[in-house]
Structures are given as C-alpha cells and as structure tokens.
Length: 81
Image 1 (cartoon, helix red, strand yellow):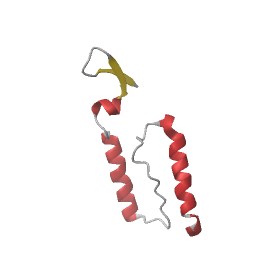
Image 2 (tube, helix red, strand yellow):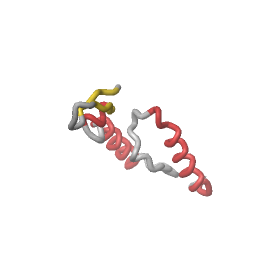
Image 3 (cartoon, one colour):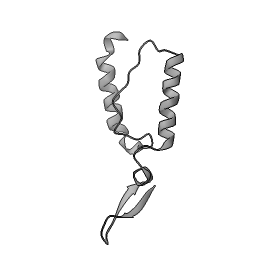
Image 4 (cartoon, one colour):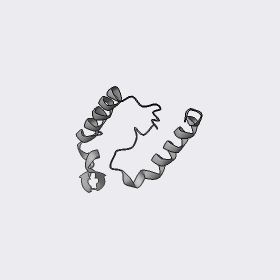
C-alpha cells in the first residue's frame, strides 16, 4: 500500500506505510522478540542467520536479494550441515 506524502514542496512522492510511520513496524519488533525467546528455550543444532536487516518482513517484491543472501550464508555453513 502506498501513500502520497508532500516533501517540502508542491510535488508529492510515494512511500510505503512503514516508511511513513517509522522504520520498524511494531509487528517486526514483536516477531524478533518471539524468535529470541524460542531460541533461548529451543536451541537449534545450527542457526543460519542471513543479514536481512535492510529488508522489512512485508517486502515481498525484494524476495530475490533475501534468497540470495540466505543462499550465501548457507554455503558458508555447509561444512557444519
């Protein structure tokens, strides 16, 4: 969902709802807390964490870079699998 937002002039630009209201939506913060709690009680044999901090969880259009980063991190941990 995109919204028109005035940027210090008469012209308008588009931005996502999350960009309009802030960098990290509350649901993202909650998801991080749930994942951290689960990791504390159920420790995995191997945890692969690709660096995806620049992506929001609803950015489905940017799935390709996320998959590429996951592939890269998996290949780096392949000897432990």
